[in-house]
Length: 164
Image (cartoon, rainbow, N blue to C red):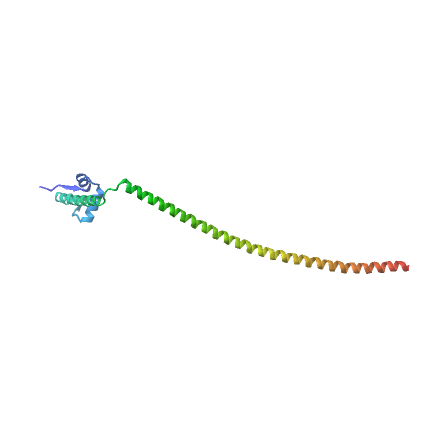
């Protein structure tokens, strides 16, 4: 008589776990299996006991992990939450102070830049004033020279008129 074969889905249904869990156990615990023509894992009846043992071991590990942590009272949780809130407030103040420091530093740097630009602008204005004064002086000297020449020309004309 031929032994019954179980696919992954059948094993998962019998053990009340997911197909993914069965596949993980196959890989993790090297459960012997065969692959049918469609690529499905097939298991013999004798392997079901092995899966039951694996399931029981995993249940014990999970329950042991749950037993290690004693239940926490609401007072302890409340204290922890209060401490966390205080720490968050402290961190928020620290971040705010740091942000204020950064803004202050940037403001000081901008003020330095503005002072520097003001000094440069003042130098440019002074130079412009000097150039305007030079231009005015040059225009005055040219006007004066023209005026003297024109005065001489007029004087010679008037003197010529007197003669005639």
